[in-house]
Structures are given as C-alpha cells and as structure tokens.
Amino acid sequence: MAFSSELIEEINLLLQFDLSSGQSGIKVHSDAAPSSVAAAARLFEKGLIDQIDGGYLTAIGRETAQHAQGALRILNSSVPA
Image (tube, rainbow, N blue to C red; front, side, top):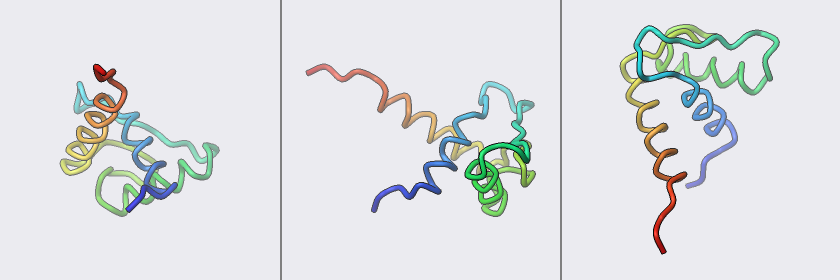
C-alpha cells in the first residue's frame, strides 16, 4: 500500500505542528493552497485537530504527529554503509 497524495498532504500538515508545546497550533488560511485547506478539513473530520482550519492537535492528533515527525527524523538521518 502506498501513500496517496491526500495522505502526504495530511502528513505534511501534521509536520508543521510544534510538539514542544501543547499551546502551539496552526492556522490554514482560506487563501492557502486548496490541497492544504482540504488536508486540514480531513484531519478535522478524523479527529486529529480541533478546528476545520487547523487549531490544536487532539490527543490522537498529537500522537500521530509524533509518529510522523519521528519517521521523518529517521528517514532523513544518514545510515552508515
């Protein structure tokens, strides 16, 4: 199973959250790229964020963002040959 472009957009949005503080949210403005606006709406529908245009991560959203950010760190690290 491969990542769809929609899932990649959602992951990219989750990567924008600052996990060092629970008080840090994001805002996806209505004039943002349509794919970003749609990704935020899907994350809201899935219960990962608390507002349709961003807001704050829910508990499951925070966990998901931690996994996404962890995977990105691992995949971006250099692996010895």
